[in-house]
Image (cartoon, rainbow, N blue to C red; front, side):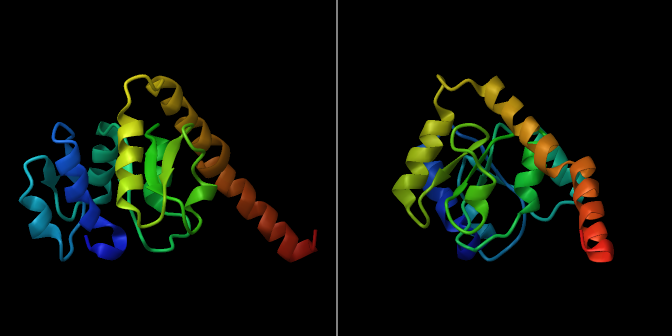
Amino acid sequence: LDRVKGADLLPKIAERFPDLHINVLGQGPLYETLSTFKNIHCFGHLSAEEVLEKIAACKAVILPTRFYEGMPMTIIEAFAFGKPVITTNHGALPTMIDQGENGWLFEFDNLESLLTTVDLAMNKTADYSAIQKNCSNTFEEKYSPKIGYKNLMETYNLAIHGK
């Protein structure tokens, strides 16, 4: 929980949306600061099983990172549970998110863009069940164990046979 991962932006979300319950998983230098907000609930370090339980119980996952992420497990795990993701539009993240379909992208390191995107995601007119289905479909089509195995075998065949 530090600035590079965007944890410093969570209090701004909490202030703008006081009815939003924000569950924060993990440890870091901003843990104590985040714990002081009424609608931010910090859980600290959790086991992998506990993390998955929290993801399964949430409405959406916010990943406000400033770091150039490759393919974060957080997004894949969210999709596995049919949860949309709100994240930044840099690094490889835009290749994983289809705007308004399985999540929402906001402009890199832009607080107003983040707050507007959270507001958009919370919009009651969005068809949340369709978005959840899109998230599940994204997981099955791109990130499921079956797809991972298929891709691995194709890579091995290419390395072994050159085709």
